[in-house]
Amino acid sequence: MENMAERYLEITLVKRGITCTARLLDDRAPITCEAVWKSLPLSGDVYHAKYARNEIYALFPPFAESEPPLENPTVTPIPGDLCYFSFAGTELGTGAYGYDREVRPGTTVVDLALFYERNNLLLNGDVGWVPGIVWGQVVDGLDAMAEGCNDLWRTGAAGETLSFRRA
Image 1 (spheres, rainbow, N blue to C red):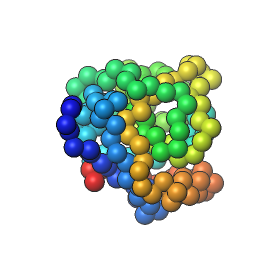
Image 2 (image 1 turned 60 degrees about the horizontal axis):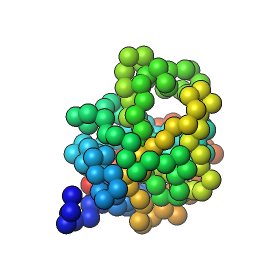
Image 3 (image 1 turned 135 degrees about the vertical axis):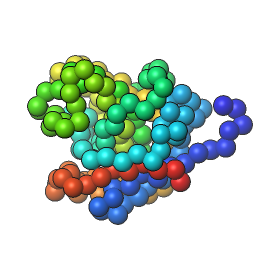
Image 4 (image 1 turned 45 degrees about the horizontal axis):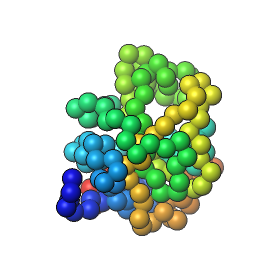
């Protein structure tokens, strides 16, 4: 993907009216970036992480022709990282996660996440290390988004939507 113009997307907490802008990391995760880009716009119920700490995310049916390889992986995302995860329904099928509508055994689900603060560790007590693909980095609006994410943590995610669209 040499000489490709930089691509940007907007990530929005719709009900709260908070938007940030991210740059796709085409040079580090080209397959993942292309799969996400082709699928935009995407929106879904937002969740706040239970284990990873400072993370919000939405779950989607698979949208890539085939799941991307683990390119540009991390288990310690930093503020502003956008991560891509793919899970089999059985990995998230326990009631403790609260995905009673989205996740069923025999299905695959894609998790698009935004990390908004430091000290994240992708370690899940049920399955162990959960490396994610870092495919984007927030370049504008992270402070306001972090405030919205903290509010989401304190007041709840019910009725809130996380939206990804081309900028």
